[in-house]
Length: 302
Image (cartoon, rainbow, N blue to C red; front, side, top):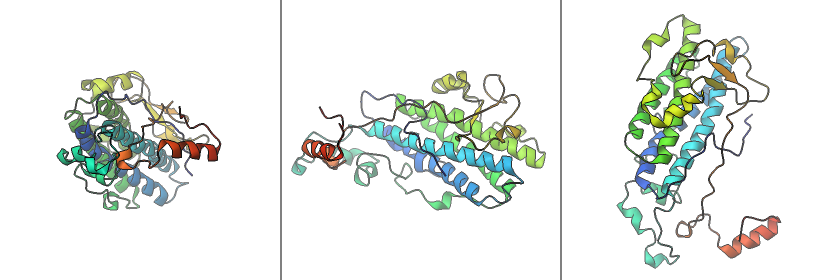
């Protein structure tokens, strides 16, 4: 079962100005072939389909724990897209004849405004919907681990490229964190492959370069030791991760690899204002007040 916590894994800075163009490229990190929806669903189905869970317990726990972290990454990328889009379209008019969404015509990512209500959608940067064809779950442990290693390396390449496309602080904060956490996953799968096969996978690294010190928004997370930590994302289960995740870190500042109980500390999830032009969420102020009365709670209405 999954336990949900009402927090983001990190704090995302809110922008002074909307940036729909950056939102459009960050969509690739959500619904692209190497996006977070792909890493999530690859590891989720592999963990569901894993055979000999008791005999191969540390490897099952590794995939299962990373699955839980990827849920949070999907949430984090989606909120980044939403922050970048917020306020980018709409002229304050609720009269449809004023063409309040006209500004979307000049944007390449119109799907965020047509399919969504000025928000993230499960698609890549061209608007192509994410597909289950991106999921690889062969049932063979070595094959799946090797694919996961490749998937994390491909995801890292795309993150680095998007980082270099935008100076957007929210997008870069997201990518800086994901570069560090993605490095952890790449190393974790490499170490798992080493345990299973005896092959020194670290000789294949970097694929590409795992040096995060070049990225200003990644260095602070390495300074916090995030490159050394593998979270269990559980209160009482998955306690054999240290059979794989142990020893000195092969990347980033020196230190020992560490299995961390529970989850990251987390941060507040942005609560974005309504967008009447998009009918999102589709209530006016009076309806908010009436609904609040029916539910018998104060909904932050002033």
